[in-house]
Length: 253
Image (cartoon, rainbow, N blue to C red; front, side, top):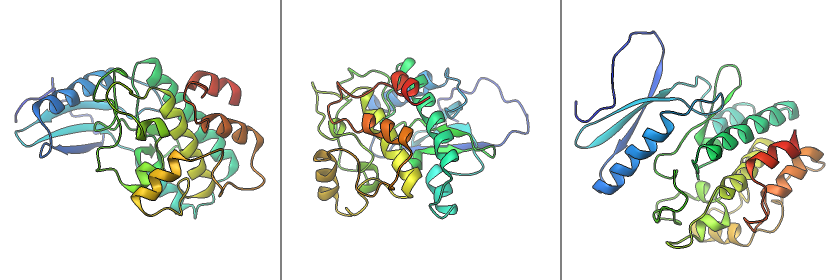
């Protein structure tokens, strides 16, 4: 075993999940950044944040040992429910999502990958936001905190805020980008689809996000008034005018 954060091995009977990050396209600075992110999230504990226990490395990869959520991802669960999630469940999940993001921001973490594929669900229907080690930032002024790198899927682009797509060194994004993604994820809960799902071309997907005004067209009509007000705040195109997680939680609950 190579470099490791394992301090002790204790047999508890708990089931963990292992995430493997291959170093094929990583330089030493990128690997060090992954270590810094893990060191940050390793100290975080919140009911709606995935718990990370330890990492170990060899020359080719990093293994991250994390909490196991038996119901899989939020996206897969929504599909299991035939894209028909009860409104009471959507509201409960939305509350948990906002509270988890508020906790991350309060601790200096910008997730940048808030979407159903990166949120897990426990057997008790508790949401667990995963920290995406390739995207998340613990310093919003980090020069690496910039836009697309060309490897993003169309689905992930449809959950990104305009300022993330348009970011560059010297013009980074900040915590409001996660608020936009919260809105996108609530749309997925309500409709079973990502925002602007008719775009299956990368360039068109980017254009759809960059020119978005107001709510996506596939919103249910009528829509719950509290959710609607929250979504209107999330989809404010000017990040300076977008609600932060704390006011979003207060206005919704």
